[in-house]
Image (cartoon, rainbow, N blue to C red; front, top):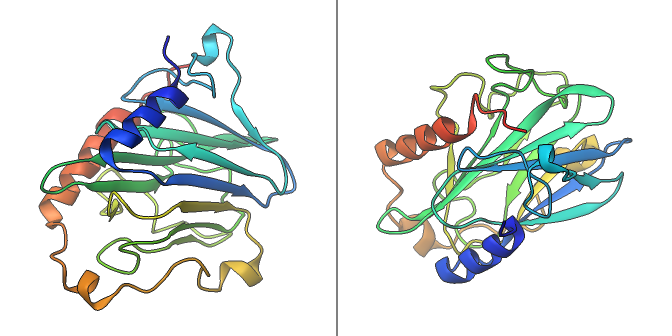
Length: 227
């Protein structure tokens, strides 16, 4: 089997998507991540299914792990779990080309506690997603905040929620901060530059197209718990 890491690297070069997702674990315990691409099995860093003997990515307290985008247009779900707490939080994305090309992404609590059950192991923690670089602050290419102890309205709680974001394909790195301390969580990300006037003037991705990508992500990633 070709590893996801190799596939991601080749696809990123082909599409121009050269940045990546960086997950920063501020939690007091380690977190684990598995990847499901295009509705496939949950796999680890070697691209092998967990049921075939692979192991998840493990991110210890204070560590940052980088995930290269799989940029072939299909949906990918990174399922993030927290040691000692049931459930997963999903970071979902697809990298599309063409007229409405872009990096479409979201956070989702759907199926977080099992098929059809909404929940997240990070409910009592601050979680923030920060895009950086080109396009930040324009359209839906904005920070996403999930405040500790509150239902996160920025993440998917229902299939029809309008929570899919869109950034340019050639935007910078995206940061997913887990259990972020409150004094950092409430400040604007230092890497998120304000958009230029030209970027603000660019036509936003039509809502109907953005919602089509949302349905695409949900179709491939939700309700699928391969292992």
